[in-house]
Structures are given as structure tokens and as C-alpha cells.
Image 1 (cartoon, rainbow over the protein chains, first blue to last red):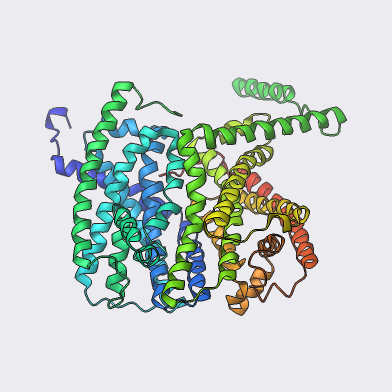
Image 2 (image 1 turned 120 degrees about the vertical axis):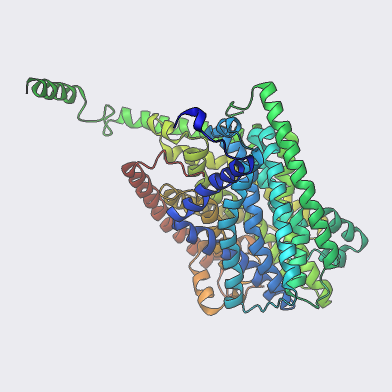
Length: 285
Length: 318
């Protein structure tokens, strides 16, 4: 085919290809390394099980075991956002892939979107296996009277969460070698404030008014309200919810738009800064 | 034909030029001393490198926050869980709280050191891609790993001290510094840390052969200890098979000894309280020796297989 005959694909088609192209190695890669099923799904369940036994030792109401299982399932997504989204762009630069992404005629968001899609695959397997183990081993019972609301909460949590991951990806590139520290720093403290192992309303129970503001502040992290909303959907009738479900859904929708916008802005900023300072191909900084 | 003969001659010449034995004969005392010095030097400089990577690569403010906030947040998760259940159930069990707090604080050594040692393989091989250079240098990778572990130990000790101080001053954990048997405490700490390092080495040996699964693997192995070693709840809560498994893990005895020497949360665990302190020390020592031998064997096996299969420069960070 001569160059003049080459029909340039549409912008949308090119970007969809980019999304699939970046998601592909993650989805196919994990299938080529079947050992990941054991390492990434079976072993992490043990940590979640420990939290279940804490509640058993404390003789907590049974729904708390369900809360831990749901929180444990969602850690898969948070870890994926931190280590495979936020820190990944920095590693892509170190490995020399970033320059290839930048010279390709595609949106940077497509690359990150593909990364998110591929990462969600293995995270979802881990999350589902945690829920299944929770149901069969610990005997938790979940009910879903409003599947539409649950789906809405879950989807917008994912969009907002991975949007946040995309924004972090640019920031991590600016932070450079501190990426590892940042990801570590965002692990336990976020588990704490977002209520991965207890309902976030527990802050209000413990601290009263300051607890409410602490939980409200933590709601800027999409997984806080996402977790709370999913717990409310799966355990209807309990009084452990932080805000009414519809308010949580509206906030999550707003956070989704906010983080996607911020991700696009920060990516453009990072790229311009990198070009100006000549740091886009620099390693080990 | 002539060309083949010529090549064959070149091969022979090359073979002759290559030493059949290592230049450093291991049986010579001088060479043994030289190798020892080399290993010591590797250990010292890798410890320094580890410290630089942990501290100097980050903004000092960020490093300070990281060192303080992360461990305290980890303990606060348990504090909040305990407080919520205490508030809704309108009952408290301070001994259980001290048990949880003390064990989870010292468990940081397991999480950080074990995680750190095994993570090194992944970092060096895939992220920094320096493993192959370390291998072709005169350094010994085993000494290098031991050195890198030291920096993790220092940072974890800092975190443990801060968390205990936070517990004492903010949460009312009744630690009586004058009542602690410090000699026993230090002995238990040294043996326990050696044991944790041995587990880390074994994991590193396995990491040579696996793709980018160190995260899940380390999290999982730490989870095994977290679940079965009586870290945040007494071992007696576990089902019978879980209690039997807990009894063969050295970390169970290590944490029990720590609680006994610090006199925090003692007697909460009906399974372990039947054992005397001397019995626990004996079990800890024997299991540490056994696990260390097994760990070094696994590390060596992983290293040999990885070199044979060409996995030293494998990259799977997709």
C-alpha cells in the first residue's frame, strides 16, 4: 500500500485501539502467567480473614464481617490504582515506553484508560474471589434489593477512582523517585480514613461532630463513599450508612467528572513541563 | 573445510586461554579473607544504598510523614475497629486492646522486613534493572540483600518506637519501661528478626522465578502470619486446625514473648499461656535455625534456577 492510499482512521477509532492496545498486555499477560491467580487472589484473602477474626474476637454484630469482606474486596482496586496506575507512568518512563506514548497520535488519556481497563480485569477477579470466599467460608449473607443503585454506585466509584489514579499518574511523574513512598503512604492511612475495615460512620460514633467532618473530608477519596454506598446496598436496613444513598451517588458522579477533568489537565501540565525542562526521557531522577 | 578447521583451532585457542578454575582459589586463606572483605564491603555499601533510597530519594518532610503516619495509621485501624464495637456494644476489654496494639505494632517487622527483602528482587530485576549488573560485579547478591535489609530494619524500628510512644501517650497503653526485662527483650528481638529475615530470603528465592507477583505474594505470606500468629486476636479464636498451624509458626512464639517481656496483653491467649517462657524461647530458637537453613537453601535454589533459565533480567512489569 502506498502512503497516499493509507486511510487515516478516525480519532475515536485510533483512541479505542490505543485503549485496547494498552489493556491487552495486562489482560493477556496475566493469562500467560497463571501463577497470578494464586498470588493475587488466594494469598491476599488471608489478610482479610484476619480482620474477620478480629471482629469475631470482639463479638461484633454479624454485618461487620460482611463490611470487612466488602472492604477487603475493594482493596484490590485501590492497590491497583496506586501501584498499577499512579506509579505505573513513572515506571513506563523508566522503561522507555513513555516517549513512545507521547509520539503516538493518540490521547494520553487513552493510554491511561487502557491501563485502567487492563488493571480492572485482575482486580475484579481478586475482588470477586474475596466476596465468594466471604460468602462460603465466613457465611456472610448479602441481599441486593436495589441492583440499579448498586450498579450506579459501583460504576461511578470505579470511574472516579481510576480518574483519580490517572491524575496521580501525572503527579507521580513529577514526584519522580518518591513514587514508591507516595504509594506506601497512601495505603494504611487511606485504609483508615476511607473505612475499608469498618463503616466510615464509625468515626461519628467514636468522635461525634469532629468524626463527621473527618468522614466528610475522607469522602474526597471516591472509595470512601463507594464503599459506604455498596455496604448500604448490600446490607439494607442497617443504620451504619454515612449519607443517604442518593447523595452518595450524586457526589460520586461529581467526583468522576472532577477527577477525569483534573487528570486531563494534570497530564497536559506534566507533558508541557516535561518538554520544557527536557525531563520526559530522563531516568533515575 | 579449511574454514571449519580454522574455527576449530580458534575455539581450542580460546578454550586454552580461559582458566579452568576460578582465579581466586577458595581454599587459600588469603583469598578467603579477600572474599570475606568483599562481602563485608558489599553488605556495608548496600545498607548505605538502601538507606539512601529510602530516605534521600524522598523529600525530608515526606519521609518524616511517611515514617510516622503510615505505622500509626496501621495501628489506628485496629483502634477504630475496637472503639466502634466497644461503643455499640457498650463494653470494653482493655487487655484485648493492649494485646492487639502491641502485637500489631511489632508485626510491622514482619510486614516491612519480609516484604522488603522479597521486594528487592522485583525492584532490582524489573524496575531499576540493575540485578544483572550486580551479578556480573564481584559482589555477592546474598550479601547485597542482607545489606539492603538493614536499612528496612532501621526504618521499621523507628516506626515501632513511634507507634509504641503514640500508644503510651495517646491511647493509654500501660507500658512500664522499668518493669521490662530488657536483656530478654533484646534477645527475643534479635532471634525474631533473624527468623523474619530468613522468611524474607526464602520468599526472595521464590521471587527469582515468579513474574511480577511479589506484591500479592508478600501480602499473602504476611497475611498467613497475620492470621495464624495471634497478631490481632488470640490464637484460641481460630478453629482447631488453625491453632495447630499457629503452634508451628515461630512468629507466634516471638509475638507471645514480646508481649510477655513488655507485660502487655499477657494471658489473653489461652492456647499460649500454657507454655512457659523458656519453652517459647526454645521453640523460637530451634525454629529460627531450621527456617534459616531452609531459607538459604531456597534462596540458593531460586538463584541457581533463575540463572539457568535466564530469568535474571526478566521484565514482566506490564
